[in-house]
Image (cartoon, rainbow, N blue to C red):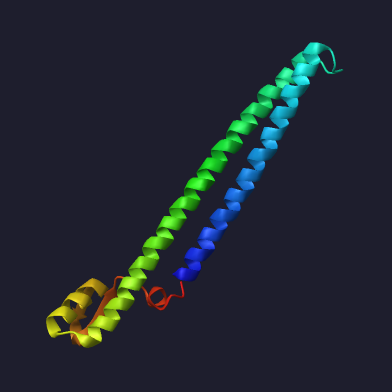
Length: 143
C-alpha cells in the first residue's frame, strides 16, 4: 500500500511539474506576443498588428488550457497526498490493534476482529471463507 501510494503520488507530482512547465511556456509566449503587439502599434515591429493579434488570441487560449491542466494536476496531487495519509493512518491503526490483541481480554479481541474482518462465509462441508477489510499486501505494507 505504501509503495503503490508513493508511486501514485510521484506520478501525480511529475504530471503537475509538466503541467506547470507547459503553463510557464505558454505564459512566456503570450507575454512575447503582447510585447510584439506594442511594438507593432508603435511602428517598431515589421509584423502586421492583425497577425500578432490573431496569434495572441490562439496563445491566450493555449495559456488558459495550460492553466486548467495545471490546476487539475495540482488537485489530483493533493487528493493523492490525502489518500496516502488516510491509508497510512489505517495501516498504523491496524498494526496498533495487533499489538493490543495479544495483551487484551476476549471482549476486546472480538472488537478488533470485527474491525479487521468484513464477513465470514461457512459453506457446506464446513468450508470457511473469510473476507478481510484489507488485503495481505496492504497489511504487510507491500502495496
